[in-house]
Amino acid sequence: MAFRSIAAAVLVCLAMQAARAQDPTKVEPTHYKLDFENDRVQVVSVHYGPHEKSAMHEHPGGVVVVITAGHLKFTDENGKVTEVFAKPGEARWFAPFKHRVENVGDTSYNAVYVGIKGKKEVISQIETTPLDPETLKILAKYLSGASTQPK
Image (cartoon, rainbow, N blue to C red):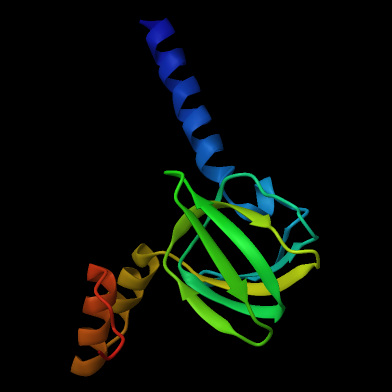
């Protein structure tokens, strides 16, 4: 009986460590530096030298603002590869994702990633803040995963 309890505790600790290890500022401190964080956002500086690669990590949904151009290859947890050609000054929205990164270019890539904290936090804000009907509609679409962009 005691063995099962200990084994369960070890498994929980390992699972928590694996979940925490996905944070890019923890598993990839060479490439990701935490600049600011509060209960709503995480602001991270991103730097990849020429031909550098990362370990698997994940980001909350958010916006990346490109500082210097880059040719990047993203490989998701299922092995799907997406190439990105980033231009200075460009801003892109990314839904939450897990991936590995490779800078396939011959120059350094720099950006700032502003990650929006999870939906749980959004829900708690909704519960404590009175909102107008239009804002509630937009939040309902966001929380359901539907696009809020005009078509």
